Length: 190
Image (cartoon, rainbow, N blue to C red):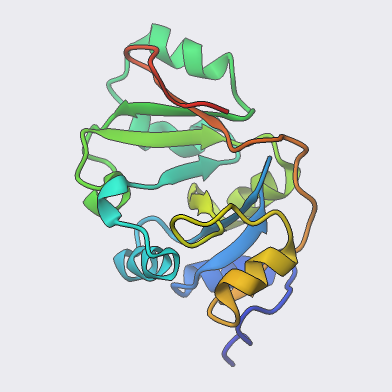
């Protein structure tokens, strides 16, 4: 039986939606996010079309713990891993060199990949139940302010999402900072 679009759901239903190629919305540390299975090219393309986001910008992968990101971290120097471990779980997104483990539709064809281990309990539960990292990008069309409520999500996307996982935002004021792990350069301020 198909899932009713944009339905407020429990965790197992949201995970089922991810596994069948759906796009879901969920609260994160600061704003509502939309996500999908990062290895399902059709799901990622659909998510990007909903946001009107250029695929070449790439997207963030969010995980419950660093072990879910291990395939993407292979080959990274131990001191760089230590730098990331010191900030995770938490509101820090790191750009790491793409080692080829991520599909090009995730990296946007760039030589880096954006990764975060979330401290948000619902995001952690989602990634654990799903069994790996998921795409995490702000729930808004390109150029619009990020959604900060379920009402904002519905205003932006109507019934075009497969599921909405209800919950509270994590209390951060701004989306997570993005920093290049190799150079330390800040690419987006928090």
